[in-house]
Image (tube, rainbow, N blue to C red; front, side):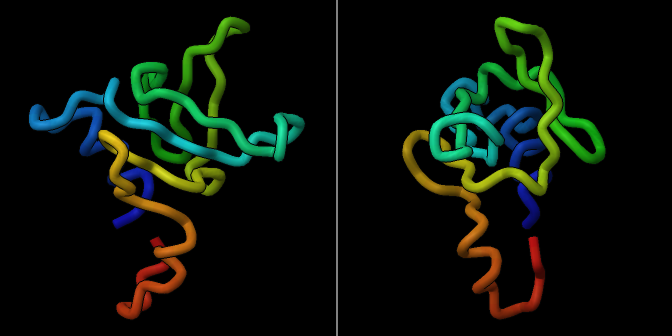
Length: 91
């Protein structure tokens, strides 16, 4: 499953509360070039990026920058494990 598909499921599946999700992503200029947001900050999930509400306005983050997605502390998706996927799906 791709990172976009995981976010869409968290956003639209009634079994999940997007506010209980955390997303880590590459963020150039941030400490360690990495940032983490709460799922409640996600405004929308588009074809090539998701939008996040920030104090400076809405920020677009391409899916290829996602490093990890967790829900209630459990990792649902991460860049490292997708590369180890034996099916060949590059996620």
